[in-house]
Amino acid sequence: MQFFPRFYAHRAFGHRLWPLVTVTLLLLSLNSCTRLSAEPSLANSSLHRTPVPTLYDCEIAKTLPHSRRSFTQGLVVDGDDLIESSGLYGKSFIHRYPISGDEAGYYKPLPESLFAESLTLMNGQLFLLTWKSGRALVLDPDTLSVRKTLTYQGEGWGLTRLNHQLVMSNGSHQLTFRNPDDFSINRTLDVYDNQEPVSNLNDLSAAYGLIWANVWHESYIAAIDPDSGQVVAKIDCQNLTRRHRSYDRDNVLNGIAWDEQRQGFWVTGKRWNKRYLIQLDTPPSRHPTPTVKK
Image (cartoon, rainbow, N blue to C red):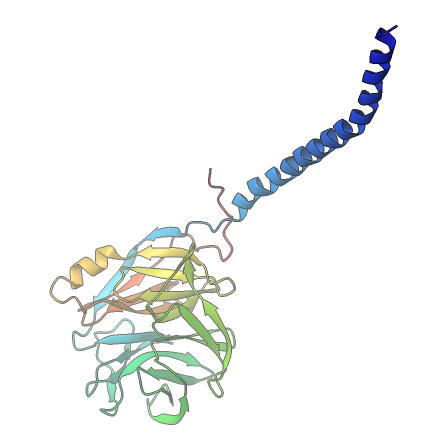
């Protein structure tokens, strides 16, 4: 007789416990599903990690003389000529000379108060930055005479043309895209090598839809995606810098100009006695395929 009451008592307790057990099992199941659904997203996130930049050796196609007088700041190709800017207060000048010549050409001295920086061509005009005076000179590319002056805030370092805009560096890790009519800023771009900001961006050039930059006191040229700001490739120029910096640490790699006709970059450095034509066997991709890190 006592068995049945105990049996029913246990059954009654079981009925009260069963909903709690069901809820607990349901929550554990949902939690497991959440973890399973999250795992693929974590795995897939590795596909979107910033890829390591493609590294190119410095393949020299041609070597020509370069004036040791030039404290090179900028370099640009204009037809069969190179136009080069040289810095330092009281010594700044612009030099136009034949690409395949012997560095003759002619010089245009600048006022002693101006420290010449980078330069580029656009719309039949030569744009020249100055270091700290906040002035961009617009010159006739043939006579090198000044047509007008534009202004900007901060320091001027590198300058190039990309599509219908000017792109300028100021020694930081940021590039500014500017209107060539009044030098107003259209947008800014932060430059990163993977996750690290690339400071000291110096002379600039444009080729293959990318912005190419000297980095002050570094022995490589960086290729920058103009949309993302990521460095997608580098040209290792240590073999050049070793030849020219041994006698003066300030004789850094600087001056880069894309030569469409020769499909390569003319590069040199401050007070270097040589300039070099560098060609790439395979151009870098603007949006390289991400690499999966395991």
